[in-house]
Length: 284
Image 1 (tube, rainbow, N blue to C red):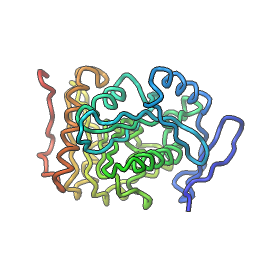
Image 2: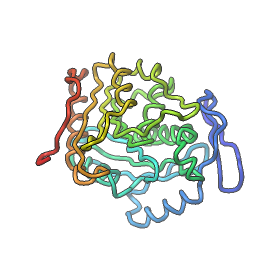
Image 3: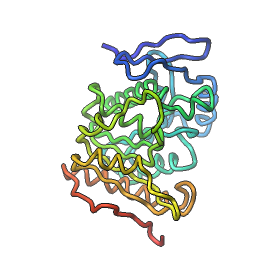
Image 4: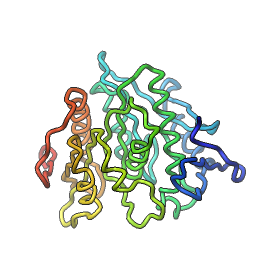
């Protein structure tokens, strides 16, 4: 039984309704802007790297790159955040281009673009559409006979991953998730990913957070650590970031991601980490 129904809103716009009732009502995504962006990105790559998927007949684009190592560990689905895209120069492109050199195929998918700046901030309204695309990406990788899949979500993409993992329809092929600086969600009306739902998630979770000089502790981050306290495979790590974004520490962050994923493949449980552990990139 399909979980999604496509409803026409007006030409060029659609909305996917999650029958389980995660969020209502749902504003539409901006398909015209998304298509223009997808065309610009596709023009830079060979046809072999472009993946065209759809949810209920509505197309979207992904970028696939296979492992450059003979023995592929598995695949990573990359979920970008707000004001980003499936090949954004900051963080997303380095992840999707470099993880294959460490044995992980990558599939970076486009997530819905909001019609207005206001909706870009209230990204929870687009979660059902995003989850539908994530499920299509998982199906695509399984058709390639890849049965170890990890999710890497940045900003709002982190919540797309978590929203799927707490659902009853979550695919068992998804074995681990990396959250990179999840977007703030306090104050978002009707947000479907509650601490109570997350507290039962036993899947390995690595949360990577930036720590900058003078930045006060984040209350939401502390709450997530408390929420996951029963998950022995949860690890929250701060990385010193001298810039406003991840620039200049991306190589180190990628090392952390693939190193942790390799560990999760061979060890069913992650040892506890001391409270407040902070990572410093080499030379930092």
